[in-house]
Image (cartoon, rainbow over all chains, first blue to last red; front, side):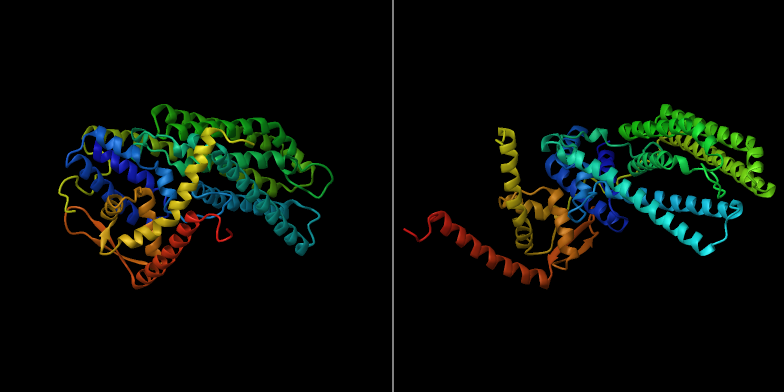
Length: 343
Length: 121
């Protein structure tokens, strides 16, 4: 148990480090902890002694931050990995969506003639949206950073006496990825904001005056889409606080995904029901078929993703438990022994 | 705006930390007379009266190593792998210059403390 606690600590520090230094730092950190524990408590320390020693160390996030260079920053070392992940996810998706809109427009826009102008328009939209999203992501993380820094030093998370036993379980199938949870929350917030900020632009533009085609469908479903995203944000927040998967959160995830699929299905069927409106707006039958097929294909892909990810999650939970029950669980073994100091 | 006692204590702590932060590198370089691994170096510093936690020392050693002031090797003999650090030629030269600078500063401060009014009297 005491060796596992040390492993959990080392693991929590190392997973916050850059890959290039992860192995070296964790090796040295592990070695030094074992040295110190053995020096203080002898070759066979009790769990209580190890816990007492670990409490003296910096909490994992603070210990990991010490290995990164100090800079003046908007987004500090503790938040930067999550920030970078969010940017890497949001910007490509956004550019992809704009590109998709551009492609659809080339099929549907009856007034599409000035190709050079359209390209510049597309590039302008990419730059605009990227700057907007990037700024928003920076703002969110800056807020998180400042909230932490504005608190009196004694009340900061890093300054509190922390509890080593609360470290996430080192069994990989139970552990919630910290960066993954933060990334999901931030991406959801950004996505939700974008859906509302650009609500009047969603739909198919045909060159005619007024709101884009199908914008009314989008507006009608926007509350449900928002509810689905808010449920997801709440869900990830709970996971972030708990730090580990439980059967309740696994089933909650399934329910949350199911609700999202239900909303998606309603949107798709509503769009399909509006075929006459598209025909009336002068969009050709083959183009409408492409749009409908694309939506159904997207829905099928979403269903497949939900089935596979949830299936894998439940499978890992079941097989992981069986392994632990058999005494061969995937607990990372301590690669160094507590005994045999040669210091 | 007056500071509360807690804020005063926190401010004082911050000043002490800043003072120590400037000395940590010098102390670590100065204590690396022979190849030493992190835990042993920390013990050496603590025994000499320079209390330093491992969350400060280990990242510092890595930074000094990355800057070429230290050289390091893993020793995997024995039951536990250990990373040994030693001064590089650049590190030894820098240590010499820092010690000279430190001695000068100590002299200046001692002069100031002994005669805060200067030579005006």
